[in-house]
Length: 258
Image 1 (cartoon, rainbow, N blue to C red):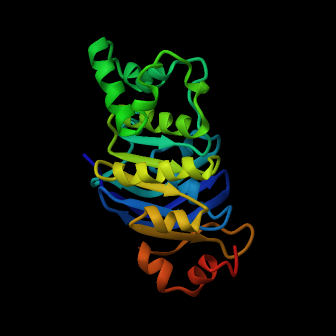
Image 2 (image 1 turned 60 degrees about the horizontal axis):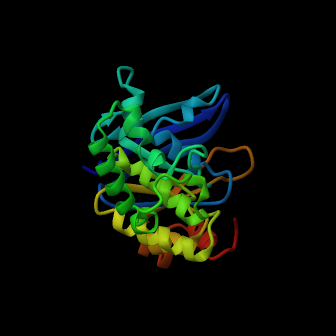
């Protein structure tokens, strides 16, 4: 079941450097939210805070509250592994496990969670690959290496791997930046389908992509080098791109800065 995400005064640090400052926003279930803004404004840092990947880095920490259906995932008694199990992540470059087959890539998370029964793994593999619109392309070569697929297919394989464990939230950090236009379109079509089941947050530098795939858009920016990233405006995507409330948003979208 898709989850509601609520950030309340979230700040994230790399050592003493504050990368993002007091981010507050609510992301509704079964929606696509795009995070846009210039490089270095904290979009990816915020995204990684949502599944507690930011704190994996030495000296990194997060302040504030990040609520998934009302539960603060930064509470002391929270099981971090359980959090990451419910929040899937797709990275900028396709990263299938290079020594594993297509099949083993998809079911890797399930095996880590203790699933051993072959019939369950088979069913989950097919369901995830169908969900990623990849089944028909690979069903006759599931035992071949995942790294042997094209770039676009590898990224859809990574999406299949993320959704095989049935998360409620899927985070995507520039999932199309390394792909050609045809593969990009396939991923965008897939995002539109996946939002029927998942809450999706996507970081993108592609303004047209944000306008095409998202329901709501958050614009992050920094005032000058060395200052933390802040959420400048967050609204329905149609409004952000046609009638933003803040001039800095309009300047960025129209290419006047950034």
